Amino acid sequence: MSSAVLVGLEKRTLPSVLLVVVGLLWKSFKQLVVRSPLDNLPGPPSNSFAYGNLRQLVSPAYGWGFVEHLTESYPGIARLRGPLGHRLLYIFDPLAMHHVVVKDAHIFETPSWAIKFNRIRFGPGIAASMGGNHRRQRKMLNPVFSIAHMRDMVPIFNEVGHKLVKALEDRVSGQTGPVEMDMLAWMGRTALELVGQAGLGYSFDPLVADTPDDFAMAIKAIPATLSKVNHLRRLMPYLPEAGRDATRRKIMGMIPQSGLQELSRISGILNRRSVEIYEDKKRALKQGDEAVMRQIGEGKDIMSILMRANMLASDMDRLPEDEVIAQMSTLIFAGMDTTSNALSRTLCLLAIHPDAQEKLRKEVLEASKNGDLGYDGLESLRYLDAVCRETMRIHPPVANIFRETKQDAVLPLSQPIGGVDGTTIREIPVPKGTSIAVGIFSSNRNKALWGEDAAEWKPERWLSALPNSIAGAKIPGVYSNFGFKFSQLEMKVVLCLLISKFTFELSEKPIVWNLSNISFPTVGNSPKSALPMKVGLYRSSTSVLDGF
Image (cartoon, rainbow, N blue to C red):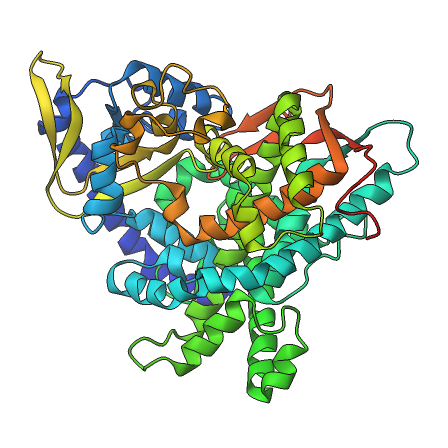
């Protein structure tokens, strides 16, 4: 970026920065001196005026302990402090969650700081849009994730899964015992190839070399990088609005903080590759069906379907090019991280619970005697479904989501609670502009809903009717989200192929799961994400992969 441009940006930015500082100080002053109905809610003390409880809530090192404390010590709702004394409402009461996430979602919207942060990372896609623009993008995306299209993706998932099996088999065969491998790295590479082929009609990684390419490494580094900037995300909106998204990314990279600089680099790589893939697909679509059929996925991938639908859409509904490209960047990140970390967590749990691993293996081998399972075959595996659901329940990839009230609102509670002044509270007036953290982790481990064994991993709980406390709670679930449905189908295919061929054990190395936007494992306190596990060949006279 030239010095003249930087000087121009500085002249335009300095007054706005001063206004922002004054505005923040005024808001903080009001929060400290003006009473609020939220002040009567119970909550833990804040140990920092600058960060409030926020750093405790998102810290990779001790965030889990703080969230567990909130889950165990508060009745579904707690009053926290955000940065500079701002009030922050933490909720995991099921009725309050239902109103925030579902019933009154138009009032409790994604905070502007999160929208702007996502725009810097991914561009103007579904994760960086609000209101009518969000609804327009969702209208275009929803049909792409239909059951009919999901069925078409299963053969692609199986093909990629077989490549993974071959890669692991090459490294295990001929060994006297199990081999230690970084399963997070392999799950990350596999998830990227799955979202590449099924999502974009593009191959990122043939899963042959011992290490992935630079692009895959950059995507893999995102969770650890985000953990370094979680407490700074609220400052991102105050970057200059002038210029393109690429300009704002460059400005973010100039801030002297290693996490922001690394995130700027990764976001640039992600955008550049998305543009390249988009241009290739656009050329193929212009050349006609024959060119499309020569591409990976034969035009059945998510982006090919979206681009064709977008070309036929009315002027009112059609997405501009930059929004279509941004969907690709969002899909790559969300599809890879959610799937790879969920798969890694599931393999880790199956290693801890060998009886469950063997029970799952028996179900899969029995169902797949005649070859790869299709969509209906996967849906029929009840224990596989239970394993996936229980893993996502007890270890949701995202521990908290944030919302902000766009107008004054009232949150009802499923059970009355006691206020600080001793009064009984049945509903909570929530002033406009209040930040809310929706505790998905806490909700999924709430003993009032799930019972005393709420913190235990028990897939069997899904094989019979759930308690009435769950059935009637209207808890917002991840399974209603189209991205999670896509991810869960990927998980089931990969787990079936892996568990049929290999055994999984924990290594002797200490594994720590770090809290971040999407949780990730490391060896001890290492800054590098990894999940070393012992992988061995499953010895059986029959296997679904024999002869592959």
